Structure formats: C-alpha cells, structure tokens
Amino acid sequence: MSTIWQGCLADTDYFELRSSGGRDYGVWVTTPPDYDRATTRAPVVYVLDGNWAVGQTAPLIITQKDPLQQIQPYIQVSVGYAGEDAQHWDRLRNKDLVPPGEPIAKELVEAVEAGFQAGARTREESDAYLAELRDTRADVFLDFLTAELHPRIERDYGTAASGHGLFGYSYGGLFGLYAWLTGSPLFESIGAGSPGVVSEDSRVFALLEEMGDNLPAAQLHLTINDRELLGDLVVYQNLTKNAATVLHRLTARGAAVTSAVLRETHVTGLQASFLSYLRTCRAR
Image (cartoon, rainbow, N blue to C red; front, top):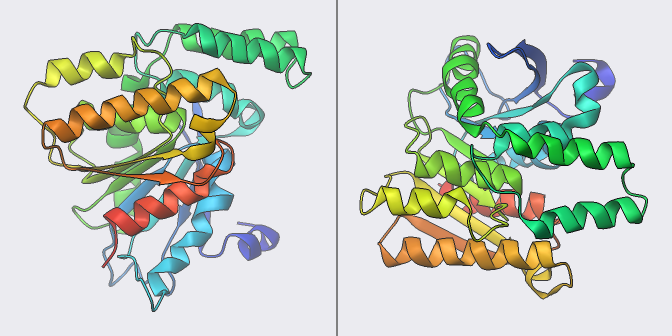
C-alpha cells in the first residue's frame, strides 16, 4: 500500500482477485495492532461493501486495545470492487449481495425514480441500478467468499481455524441474513445492519419457512436505525418493519439472535452497526 494510504489505514494490505465468475474484487486486509502472523492465529471478520465501508470500519480494529472494552483479536477483510468497477460499486453490489429470486419492491423502484428526479442519478445510472436486481446471485458471491477468497486469506495470513465472522450493511445486511439462513459453515457470527428486506415477499421469509426448527448455530446480530423507521421514506420504513418481523420470528423459535436499535439514519448507521456487532459478538 502507498505511504499516504498506509497513514490512513494502518496495518492494511490491498490486493485484487478475479473470481471464477470473472468479476474483479478489491480486497483490503487489516491486521490487529502489533500482529505477528508468524506466531499469532486470529480469526477473520469479512466486511462487505469495501469501497464504502473500509474507511469507516477498518480503523475500529484498534478496539482490540481498548482498556475499557476489549474486542477479541480479528483480521478484517473488506471486500469491494476493483478497477473501473470500483466507481460503480453501489449498483454492482446488487447482484452479489441480494438472494437469487428476490423480488424488486415497488417502493425501491419509486425511491430510485425519486433519486433520478432529484438529480442524484442519471436515467442511465438509475436503469443500470435496477437492472442488477433482475438477476441476483448472492449464492455465487457466497461461494466466492468461502471457497476462493478465504483459502487465500488463510494461506497468506495464517488465520485461526475457527471463529470467523461476517458483517454487512443494507443489502450487505440482507446478504448476512442469507448466509445465516443457508447455514454457511464458515461464519460463527454474523452482523446484519439494516438488512435490505424491503419486500414482504422477500426470499428471506421463504428461507425462514424452509428452515423450520433447524436453526443455525452461528450467532446473528441484527440492527436497525430509528431514523429509518421514523423518517418519511417508505423504502426505509418497510426495511425496518420487515427486519423487525424477521427478528420476532427468530426469537420466537429460540434462535441465537441479538438486536439493537441505533440512533442513526440509513447512511450514517454503518459504522455504528459494525461497532454494535463487535461489542455484542466479539467482546472478550
């Protein structure tokens, strides 16, 4: 990493990896303070939406030295997009993070259209954003994380054999729910921040029914933001209501799930949600 970036993201390496599906990913690997990979074996926490999230979450690795509430050692692996794709991360993520067959809620379409009318996106960008949601493949991306990326991290950084985690926010949170519901064996804890369960017909609810009483052993931590629920954007209101429904159905079955309501908006909630995950699932 260049000197300037090393100053901003201490103890962070960066590399790019092309998946077997032909997509180029950017990967930031942040090791704990004073980490010696020759003698220490730390588990990995995978953080999604790396192009956006790495700057907000990687510095929190210093919590492992917090004398008032220490967090268990972990290596953070932030996963985003590389090359020219990096500038389009906010739409490319739709295909990777959304479960296959997930319906496109009309409230989301309306929100994208409102963004176009307000000048936040061009018509071309708006159409491209929705196009990525018509063939979603969270299953393929999950395979990439577990079968392609993790073996490389394991080899290059000498990770622990267990204790790995996953954190995602918004559609990344939806991916976290998907990974938990499908029982991915790699992760022992998953943080799902403001998971993008926008539709009442979400595949998440079908997976809940299919799962029955066979609950995953991994700990799930779910957060939402009060400003999402109390604000005037329907897409965020639905997200929080549906996430609460998921939570209630899981707690009724005795699932290993914890939750928190944060005093944030959808945009500002990412870092707070990640910190909540660390404090709940990875405290000493």
